[in-house]
Length: 209
Image 1 (tube, rainbow, N blue to C red):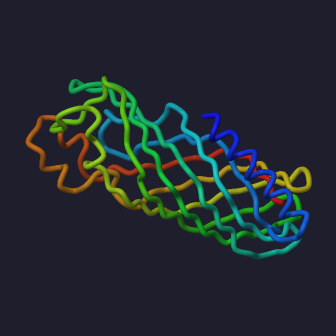
Image 2: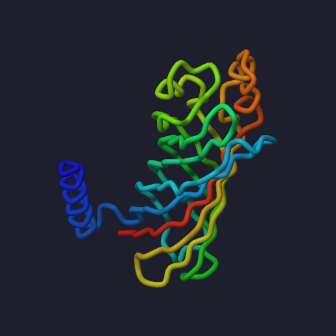
């Protein structure tokens, strides 16, 4: 934790220095909370508890009507399980790449729409979470699709120079679990099978250099 804090401080100092030299105009930092929802015919999987996101962004000037906004983020999505086969919390940790059309309605308000590509780094659960067919709760990663793709849209207000406050919604297109998982011979396998996707609402703060 101390090493991470030191690296964060060093990165911030480097960014401020680069800004002073005019090298990173439009680059910024972003952090916020994420609320996940499972789109599924089953009532067993639920969104929340709250996750979080943090990373880098590249956005056009606030006085430019159209531009490309790119975000590279670390995203933790969380959901709970509540069924006869078990209960608990699962954490899915992603690296995401988003490229969006950014439209500045005014210098104080903008909206964005585009796509998001995500790669699942790891999946962890507490000991009470249960997936039918898994030998133990720490072996669940192999049941998830590592690649996810979705459509995303959001809004952002700019109350002060460099500061942004916004919300972004992402709807996943690909299935959360691998299709082969649906064929596991277990009474609960269908609960974790096809047609389950994650939708995420992000509430965030951003700072552009």
